[in-house]
Amino acid sequence: MEERVYNFSAGPSVLPVEVMRDAAAQMLNYEGSGMSVMEMSHRSAPFEKIINDAEANLRTLLNVPDDYDVLFVQGGTTLLFAMIPLNLMTGSGKADYIITGQWAEKAYQEAAKFGDAKAVASSKPEKFSYIPKVPAGDFRKDADYAHITWNNTIYGSKYAAAPDTGGLTLVTDMSSSILSEQIDVTKFGCIYAGAQKNIGPAGLSIIIIKKELVGLAKESVPTYMDFKIHADNGSMYNTPPAWCIYIAGEVFKLLLKNGGVAAMEEINKRKAAKLYDYIDGSGLYTAPVAKDDRSLMNVVFVTGDEGLDKKFASEANAEGLVQLNGHRSIGGMRASIYNAMPEEGVDKLIAFMKKFEEENA
Picture 1 (tube, helix red, strand yellow):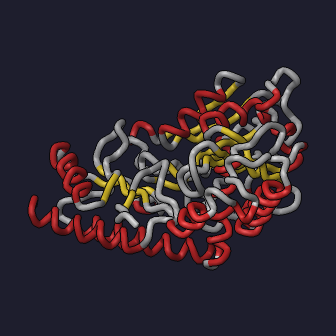
Picture 2 (picture 1 turned 180 degrees about the horizontal axis):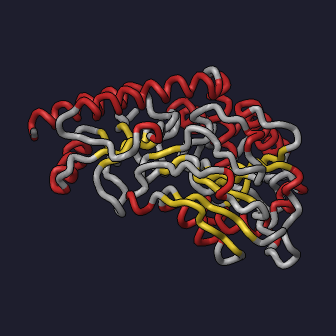
Picture 3 (picture 1 turned 30 degrees about the vertical axis):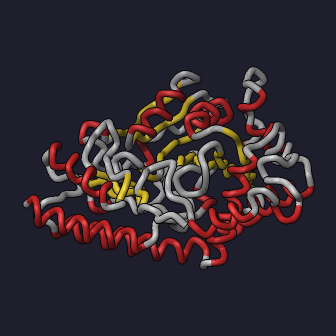
């Protein structure tokens, strides 16, 4: 087997080696069917078992109550930025958004196309370096929902707890944090996530939504954009992204086998603490995010010298530590340490950072 690099990409991102090996072994003949999952009918018994098992295992991992639907849909969260207001901003036509990064801002801008979207708080003036603490009274009482982005992939911040919205339905984008830490699903009316950061290949999004919020879309909403269509058809109104669902399901099985989300959270906290502790004690690197709001998944850091940052990423790449460049919009460095990043990868990154600091201090 070819030697693998440590892939710190923010997405598409590292996947569990065990899952990929198993998928490769069954690429041409899935469980004796004589064909690949990519070839089989989505109406066939083997695939119905794949999607049903995937949903059941995700429900177990996140303790999803029975009064929530779990939907698998095509596309990424950019599509969901429009689907959310089209399905939920249908009462007063108002929705309140907290802007904590580029993706939160894009979600807000998309919602503004369909109704009265309001940015109730934003950390943009401080370069999204913290999560605004918004009192319940700042939300409009008649808004259809409040929206947050749980983890900010580009800027390296996250929510420590769900905000008090004063009783408003809370909607959250958890694309880059889902399954990385334990959450109480009942605090949210809707959780959505693209798969390509912590679950599987790009092309799949997952929606966990309270049943009472399904069926609120207006008749003018395009068929595929209506949550009820997907709920009523078991996520198979049309041909689903079968391969993506299969890989996601295999990831869910692996997580359950290894102790579930609680065990994964412990590992993630340990990985992140190692990296942040080194950065905080360093004379070269700094992490620009408020300590209480730091992401477990996306560790952003800088040297303060743009040229040195680029040199760091280049030399790290040569050592098999790849995709450490910060997002093109802000520069610096970013280590995405999702569930599938082994602790050894973080240890090797820290060793390289020490060496680089010694040579460039």
